[in-house]
Image 1 (cartoon, helix red, strand yellow):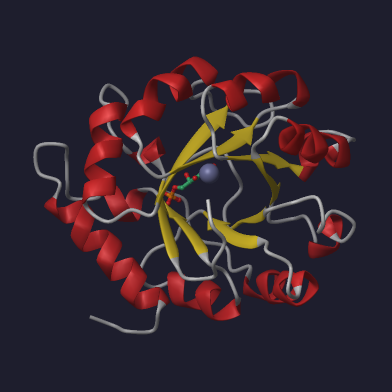
Image 2: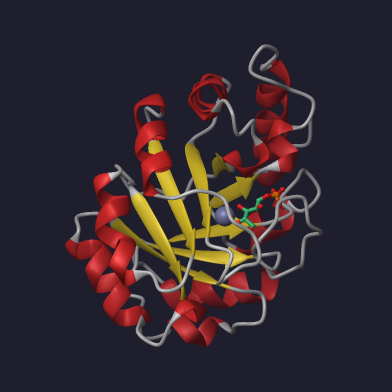
Length: 229
Ligand code: DX5
Ligand code: ZN
């Protein structure tokens, strides 16, 4: 994984066909996805349950690029090795998921994986001020985590603050929740480079008709890059 600040579109398979993850990952990559975003929910930290490390391991061979695993679970630490073994390239943990996020980020890097830290909408940028040298990605939630298809909450001011705090460090800013052609420009302008999108990528398409995935990905990328098509 090399670092750059170009716009990267990361479709969330939360909005894909759960009976067909392998084929869905192959379809979105073929249609231009940069990263694949994998949402893990435990029914405890968030009110919804998705899947765990065994499913991530099963999905892995179907992804050529970056597998970006977003853990919405508490506790995190007992499961880090399992998600690392499953082949995650990035593992993000929530700052709100426990009292020891610093230790969690050390453990993720210790497992040989890029370490991400996620912030709920109610959590200020200052929560990561002392974590900037321990993290490879800051995930700014623009919905309260737990479900796809929710309305975007504008966190542009927080993104700007984080972008200034990061300076020259090789740290990605990722946006997660309600990203579409209308909201992508706001956060891209503020300094985000990884845009997660579930509903806005998968709408209108399927594994047997993946063309709309490509159209959706290109439209979000163009909007974020300031070129309206
Ligand atoms: C929310 C998840 C997401 C989100 C993306 O808890 O982390 O990745 O569902 O889905 P959309 O783009 O539909 O908001
Ligand atoms: Zn997510």
